[in-house]
Amino acid sequence: MAGHSKFKNIMHRKGAQDKKRSAMFSKLSREITVAAKTGMPDPDMNPRLRLAVNAAKAQSMPKDNIQRAIDKASASEGEDYEEIRYEGYGPGGVALIVEALTDNRNRTATNVRTAFSKNGGNLAASGAVSHGFERKGLIEYPASVGDEEKVLEAAIEAGADDVESSEDGHTIWTEMEALHEIAGALEKSLGEAENVKLAWKPNLTVDVSEGDAGTLFKLIDALDDDDDVQTVWGNYEVSDEIMEKIGQD
Image (tube, rainbow, N blue to C red; front, side, top):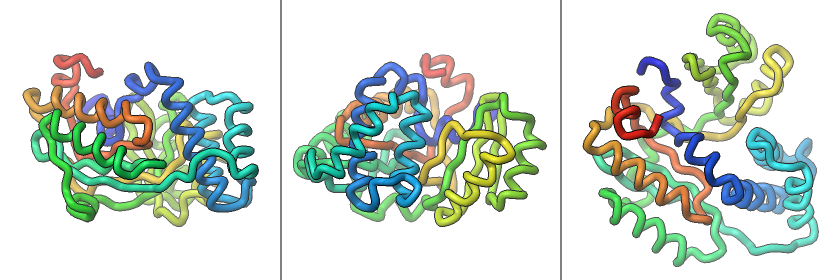
């Protein structure tokens, strides 16, 4: 798809997230606290916490907020959050994976189901969608870090699986277990990444028509607006022309 890294469509549009900075910080804080509770409260000793802290830094979350979220876990404060994954289908047969952290399973399930049903989708059984995705490591760099050849060479040397480059930036995929090691190696050659996280990468993508695209993005926005939803992943691609027509570019 010309002019876009595929992943800009596969994950979610950053522009929408930028408008909801305070809600985003709340979600990042929740992930940091949960990560710190599940292991050591030291990012150097806890890979999941390191990912959460890096994600927060990438979104310019203040250091005080990050430390406060870690301290909550150390002091055993805050709610006990449960990790839940929902799977479903959106308009045009798009497969969606919704990752949530919740202190009320019934509330979150109702909200997610409502978002799907009101926006042309339907919730599916666990495993109905995820078999079409791979759990991978994801590293993102801005285009300013260098051209495609430079990034590809660095990625190969670091042991990455795949690189997707466009005028928007570079997306580097790794094996899930190798994410931290490869991210560390790339940092030495390319500097600090914009994003380092675990991701759901689709094995096949679906081209979405103009008629379905608007409704699909309304569904994703509705899910993303829910406080309990952490991330929405999908297997969709939308052309530049359609993105411009529906005002999502």
